[in-house]
Image (cartoon, rainbow, N blue to C red; front, side, top):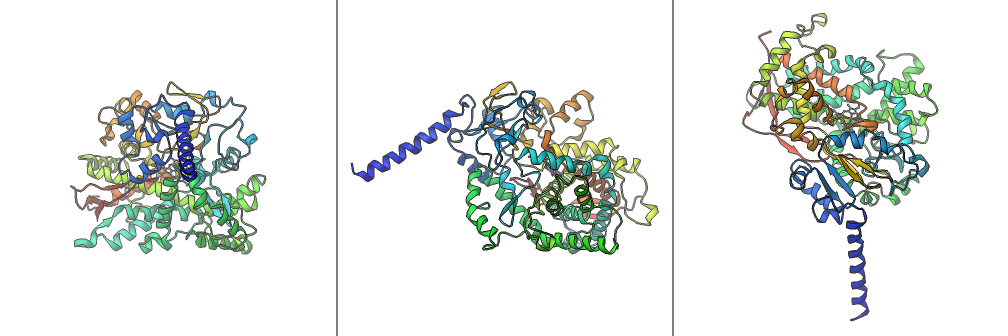
Length: 558
Ligand code: HEM
């Protein structure tokens, strides 16, 4: 044999041993899963690229309640896992020594005592500003940063505070309905066909910008994806979802260290988020208003609140951070170099848009299921007509607006929404947490320290023992049958995540949903263009839908 052959052989043996070690070193051999997945994360990467069904459902059907989906990754199906993993289990917070692998940039001492920790899959979601990581609450894996910023932000997102945002949502609902009237209602032929998922995106994206800056982007009035923001967000999420399965690949691509270094020196212009220019203009306007005392809208929006947070907690919400906060709505720690004039047009505005996508997906699911489930639409409309006030006589508007507080009290509406959340959680990825070095017991299994564990809403929310044999059917009535059972089902709901990282904006999302659904159904008669046609679900990090067209006409029976 030649030297070259020997070297080739040595390489193959080394790589082979490395892969074999992945299979055996983690102590997860007793958990079943695809053979290749136990050797390399590339299996999961390819699985998610190719999968068009419910993520991991096929695997749980084949391998049971716990599946090894990577050399060091386990997916759980039993809803008990939500409490054991995300509920900051009792045995997880006693840890003193941390040897967690590969948590980039987080000093070991910070990692102590604050568990459970997020895995590197989140890091991939970080924005980049002037060549620096610009984290959001979602992307940050640093528990200390998260704790401080979340604490500062929590008061702006409580159920009570969110009620003060109701006028912003109402304003967007009115614009939405006016645009429906202008463009579709009373038209004939294909002129009245509404691509509903797309228009619901326009709605939620405008709500979010109005709420943050008292000014919508204008998605609804223009009837288009303004500046390509939605398209940009979609490709951002697609990237993060796929590359997040092998986070080290990210270091070669979006968070390429060399390119980031070049960007820091101004020798390379990174990817520009198209919503940033809009955000910067709003911040400048606000500063101008402050100087001149000419506020056009006296209601306090999120930008005002972030400014106030800076005054109240200067130690955590610095000048730089407040710029990041307002740009991202969702707390990007944008380390911009000075004031807004030098703000980098970065990806920082991103998280609010990601969140808007969740709300749009959820609204689409609610309308789709209500319209397609026999008897559901008429039953829901009956409840709304019986309990809600007539059209807003106070404003002389011909549109119905539904107060959030009233909508929350309607049991069938609640059941329809809850069931749509169950059938179609917007979040398609499995949030991963790292088991502390001492290990943890999850669903009765002892899991060694360092293992990445998680569960997916699409899987736990279809747990047969919890939701019944017809778990694959949309049936709102299941939420109205038996109080004890309903409590069990509620505990198994994971659409907003759970624990310390539970969705910060859930009350805002619920307000959008609980207001728009009844308001539209009271104002319009909504029908499917093709009742036989199923929608298409695009499997990914966010579970988008398309091919769902409706018609609307004004109701004449009220
Ligand atoms: C129906 C709509 C929504 C759904 C289904 C949803 C879902 C989720 C989920 C599943 C998580 C947890 C992810 C994890 O554990 O890794 C999350 C986190 C988050 N969501 Fe939402 N979300 C929605 C709307 C919103 C809105 C409207 C906002 C902002 C106004 C928002 C802001 C956030 C933030 C900031 C986090 C990160 C929280 C943290 O890590 O502390 N979400 N969301």
